[in-house]
Length: 81
Ligand SMILES: [Zn+2]
Image (cartoon, rainbow, N blue to C red; front, side):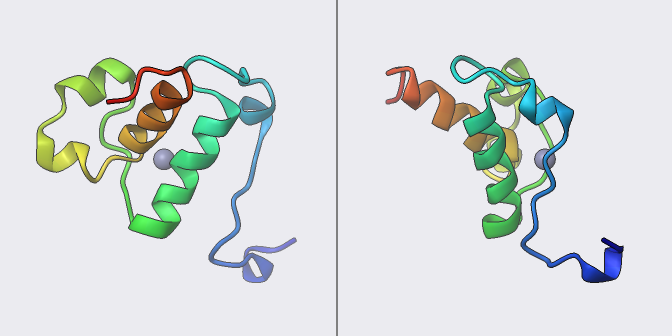
């Protein structure tokens, strides 16, 4: 597949995805949420770790794909608000 054939909504999954755990932090589900937030909300990669998200300025955190990822993973673990 050339870059020309790729569609704007494609998410390409590599070895890091297939090696990610099903539960906890940085999971396969979390990676999908992270990538979809880029496509759906135009989020950026500001705060690359859980600690980074917690320390990120609110204006950056709301636009961070990692915020959506960690929120989904923590909610799945029963740690949501
Ligand atoms: Zn990202």
